[in-house]
Length: 424
Image 1: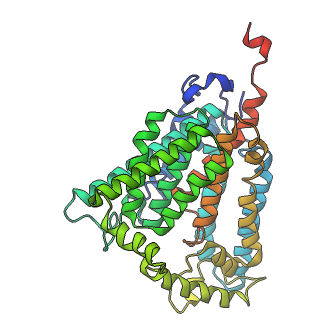
Image 2 (image 1 turned 90 degrees about the vertical axis):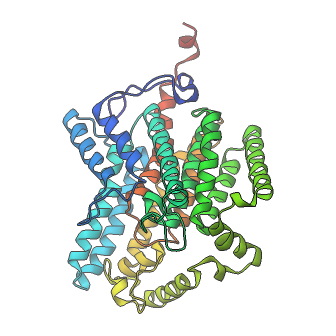
Image 3 (image 1 turned 135 degrees about the vertical axis):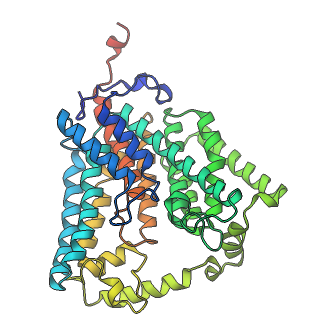
């Protein structure tokens, strides 16, 4: 039995991720709902940051607690490292907040981090491979729905709300952020490629989702999103090389290039002006807010010199900055607000995601899943350079789910039937 009470299933019983159904418990169904709703950041309260996904998480926690099904070690052997990273991050912010009398802001920020990094893993992680694959497929489906909703807003709705489409016609969709929406598209692509490579998703699913995700990324006009997508595909090929994956990627790239050349109208204007022109000219100033973000980063480096041991406290950077805004770089923000201790805590959190996939990367049966985890971790590390605090569920749920995929493999491998039992 697994930590959540679901019966582990043999690897061979999971062709295309469909054969043996996961446990049909209310807690699992609520976990699927929580994962599906996680990219839909728009569905939240106005008073505090509490999303529709969070409601499903709380309900799942209540059911699982009642059933005694909460996992003791959601990330297996790396759970202790994960908890240590959280404690270091929180302690650094606490010390800085106490020193600068920012207790109220500390409470708000740490409540969000505790929910994302401690409670969400209890619902999403620590499950059997069969259940984790269902959760991953639910996430990909949700990202596809988010992209389709954004396309409908841009191409059908005459005057879409600014929550979904920006002033310069960049797609935000239900994520409500352009770069993060594009990153979600890259994450969905990586998950689907990894599952297909591992035999846990069908080719037709990849063929249907790929154009939607690719066009959605273009509609965001995000250089960061394009970089994440390219990194995701490239790293998947590096970590889990195979002939069929290379053929598929080359064929897909050739098809996209041919369509874009033959039908220029298919390439959104916002992608052409914000991404292609900047790449062609080699000028980052054509890519939107690069200069403004660089000024915040330079300011953050200057302010950090005096705050290496004791930071300025949670949410205090915007109060000190001459630009009245937090630096959109999580590493620098945590260094300023929580000192080196918080920054090291973030690094430890990311290191907790390495042992499980690295231990399976050399095994051909598990390589696709391990590559998915490592690639999502790399995308997450890259995206931390583009936004402030990272407790939003639309990003942490995919990260936790990616780690969970690889953490499910050892448990799955131990229960694999022997050759004699297979022929019995």
